[in-house]
Length: 359
Ligand SMILES: Cc1cc2nc3c(=O)[nH]c(=O)nc-3n(C[C@H](O)[C@H](O)[C@H](O)COP(=O)(O)O)c2cc1C
Image 1 (cartoon, rainbow, N blue to C red):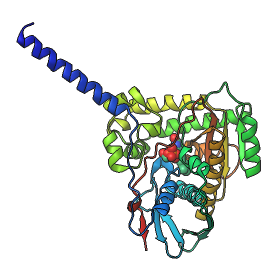
Image 2: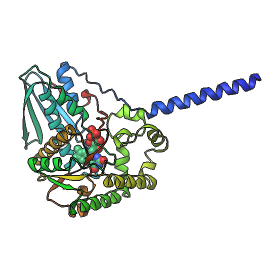
Image 3: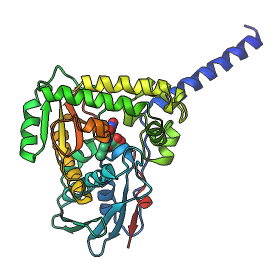
Image 4: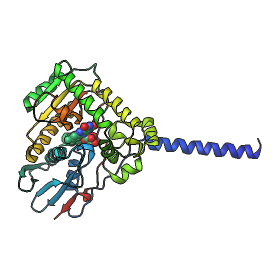
């Protein structure tokens, strides 16, 4: 073989290996390595605060600000005014629901580490207070597993399996919320209102721009920002993730092709669904936090029972579609169903020192 041909062959092979390696690395699950170190907090409290942050929040905005007083065993939680979805959530409804989700997950983390917790809401400042006291040295690994396992599952669920339908129905009755299973007439109404509301939002310039802002479109952007919606958060993994990152940018994510793809995904999610849970409450901030707490209670229970959950807020966000939904004062709409492999939280979460101030 001629020397020139040999060099060309080696160069091509190196390029191919480099390209393949890059594809494999991009396709792998991103680990954002949340920094749990924070001055003034011991290892146990840092771990508890980290577990609390695995709570759901709309668009993964992680809208919580914490003031922590370790010597007094208390902390306050308030809404971060910078972390709000002004277009789809102008009244901060979802922001306060998300804070409720945070409170419930944090309570659960404290309980897992043997603490007693009390919660109260201060309506004069719209802050939430948690007092905690260690009462046992026993750590409950099952509760920790449940927090880490809970996640939003955006896949189409397995409609051939409705074995857990009765369980969800009973749970909702016990907790006090509505459940509409696949065989009810309300189910079809929710499905249609959700699909229509999604279509409206997908082609709305401002809504699309807000979503694009919270999309994370490379592993680097995900690791830098540690919030928002990475490919994994959208249920896009492996080779699909490689192509998604290769061909999507913050500009074309506001365009028609992206909108069409989102509409097709939503349709497939709605077709892959065992039932919808509607969690309701009044509209005051206190009530919204309580509603978020209740929704997370349900979600953690469903997680333990391997029932997948996907909040779909589009119809609630759009007044003309909200009125079509069954039930009243709807705040959270959860698509639920069974899957073959449950999965776990992608844990795209910010460093603790970004939002916790220790006194
Ligand atoms: C109040 C609220 C509303 C949400 N609405 C939607 C929604 O409309 N569509 C969706 O795909 N996910 C929705 N989510 C799920 C979030 O995107 C998800 O919680 C966040 O990305 C963090 O991911 P995780 O739940 O897997 O931890 C919502 C979550 C909350 C708390």
